Length: 100
Image: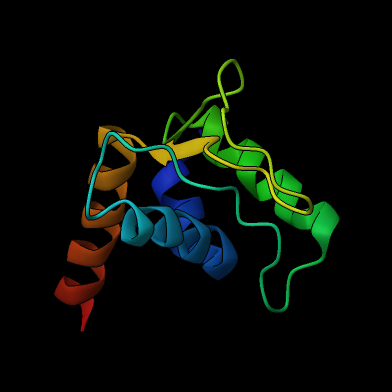
């Protein structure tokens, strides 16, 4: 059986990407955030897969129908962390603290 939380705990890039959306959304959880298009140590192709994985788990939601801001080299206002994504981060952090 596949455990998404194990995957989040074990793949530091996946955790870092979800944590990025948690941090940029702290001021307003309802606001859509720009897509992270570069991540240190992660190839662009892998970053696409990581975004897809977060969407598949329901930890990010995607806004592709209404993105009023267009900027060259950016994908504006398209993602935000979900309540399930916040819970997943919290669970992984709590489990890490219990094992230390």
